[in-house]
Image 1: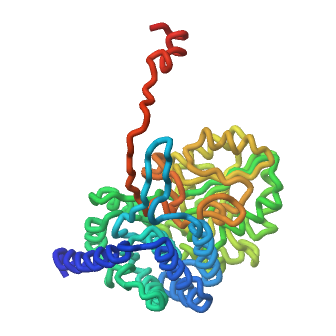
Image 2: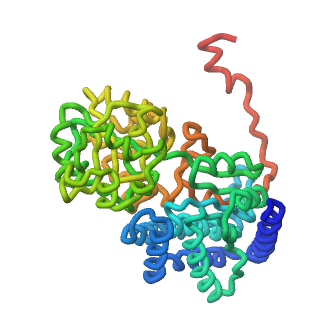
Image 3: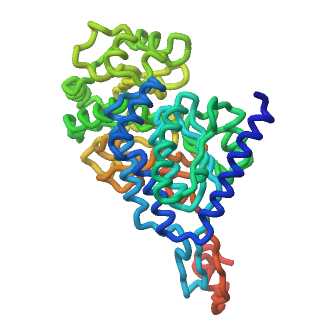
Length: 467
């Protein structure tokens, strides 16, 4: 199939989506948008469907594990639905007599969502729910390995749509086989691109000519200082690092531990299943055998990972992940980057100041803008970290994977896509959420003149600097 045929196929999908969106918006009420969003939410959260989607995702992508996929599908969707429950996205959303401005919520139109294979059901569902909540139609472009999961998710959504009399064309996907040409056509023809996934996809999204919201690279590093509760820090890092076999962009990739508590923390990690490995070269050779990450290690269960890295018998039988000592940072030291596996780099810092220097070097190399973690009893350090590091999020005393994308025990928006600001080459520095799926029209009325005199503006400046 040549590019023109791909373009025609996708063009027809977008045309049907745009027509359905127009009918969805005409005469709409907030209840209509809310019910559509809830329909998509129940499509993935209903327990039997959730399990089927999780099992299919692991079977077809070979990434992650079923129990954690089930948890992720449930919690991410439930949290999102909680976040948007009382948000007004239809009709007049603000009316300020003081400014004379009335603001009316308006859909964007057709949203094109590029989604990764790491979360082939949860990420599409998140995008679909946000799009419908704001009155849009949505077309999803899954990765090749994620096609089957996306097809199943849409089938479940259609069952719920049929109950409500909603048009199926509101939610569509690029048909199999997926291709870069089809995805490119979708990005060029839709009204807004939402892109999560490889940096190749992000670059194409941001240069396609359609306004795009994309996210950056994850490479989370976490500092453990001398004031931290070491047992709690070890437990949280282990739970986070091993969740869904480290498929998350929020999974800890590096730990920086100050010298004063280094040995004690290594012991605390060992008690949780984190096995210390001092032969960095051996791990690097097996994890990047040809300069690329070993697919037999990526997002695999602990036993499979240990066998692929030929570490059987060299680490305890109850090992959950490997903790590899290193001091190298940069392209020639791949352990300092994202590993997408149950392998974490461990850095020993002479003191807290030294830990900061290591963290900044890692983020400058990879992962700038995404997030950094700190385990400490000194909250002032966390605040100072946020003022100094090239990061959009500082996660304090929490399991990073569960916290960064929203948690029921913190105030972040539930999302599977983290904007990384200018540090990560993104237009947003927030978690992707409903505000990125909506626009507004302002009605502007004349109000009494409020023009200041020059002295009201420059008086203080003139006093200090002169005219």
